[in-house]
Figure 1 (cartoon, rainbow, N blue to C red):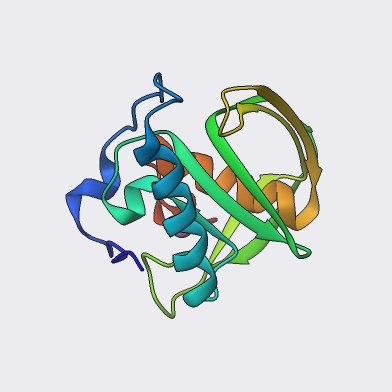
Figure 2: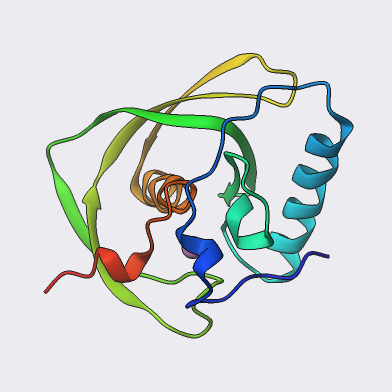
Length: 146
Ligand code: NI
């Protein structure tokens, strides 16, 4: 189990760095620990900066499917947006209305460094955008709908 960094810790504002060495056994260990921590905390997403790592890695679990994304990038957004109350393990017990595109296309790498593409909509699209925000030091409080 990893300790989750809570707001307003400055570490959450740091931009993450791309994973370059996919053979580094610490990467697989980190991902495995992140999946366990996310499950134990009943979260549906977790980004490496929330567990004190500056690597561009996040994990998401929606509809009983776990996604592991390394070096993810959003390639396109739908024009249509929606407002939804979002929570975050770094803001325990808090929820904020956040507006995001309904659909996204994402490119990333898997644990072996192979390219993956994800087309997501609804909750999965929202969680993926939330976690990728973490990798850029962006938090839900930056996106609250006024
Ligand atoms: Ni979060």
